[in-house]
Length: 414
Ligand SMILES: *Cc1c(COP(=O)(O)O)cnc(C)c1O
Image 1: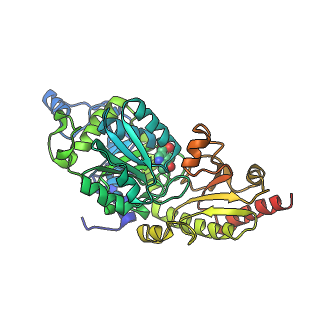
Image 2: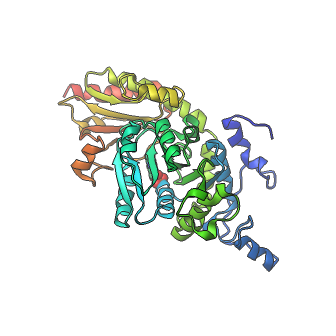
């Protein structure tokens, strides 16, 4: 099949992979189990032959979505999960053991930070470092370091890791390099291009895109040599070595934890993914316009957006993400402007958690998703008390800017 572009590949993936009844979408397979007329065949599938057994280990519908994600990320295989957090939990608990050391960005999604607390209770050492400079990552290296984790654009601070530098460092030290690509999505960035071993996506965000399904995925880029990794169980050292890591995650992480993506959610996410590029281009242009408007407004003290030349990693973002800067804005209002009063005046923008929806969302970060962790950790992660996290959607640009303008003007006159 001729190699086509990003969107063409997604649109025609189901058809090309074996059409059922002429359907253009992979059907939603709801069967819990899969039967075989020959008992030997059933046994062969249990012993590694391609096929389905019990839906906790995947269905034709989740497989079809996984193939699309693999194409989008330019990887060798993908695995889907019920949520992004399920994907991360399966990854870390399957590939790390007590006594291993993980180096992570300190600028990460709050729930990922919470998961690292759990890993530490299980005896895995975690060091948080500033990932914008690879030197900080290198300084944390220990003999028992196995893995390095970072997000691309950090949620919510928008810091951008030295993705290339960390990739070279991981290659030189033979470390598994895990990149959470949720904020950029494979339309803006493929972590494989900077040497990532495993790419994680929260499918709940850009890829699904419509706030109507949760999901997560892991993609093996094929760049890490699993024969050198000490934690692969002997039983999974079978077949092509490029598949060992994902086999262990599937057989241990997905099967033991059971956080399987439902066929219904896989279908919704698949349909959403068809318009990923269209939506994200509009989101990026809306976000850039809003960032420019807000950064020139007298009631706004600070706007963090990688597209602004004032952003500390603007040049890096421009180069890595091809001149597009995604959906997330960190907005801090001027002294004397009440954050909650301002938010309550928004009419188009929704007050809700979540990011990467078609609708624009605003959230007071320190008082909500970062509340539980307390002020010291918030300070380390760069979450100011007055920070409003904005996830820009695909509304008409004038409506969006008009809504922020009226809410800020109303605040000014108080
Ligand atoms: C939302 C998010 C996750 C977790 O994904 P869920 O699908 O909500 O579990 C992980 N990383 C980042 C950067 C996120 O924004």
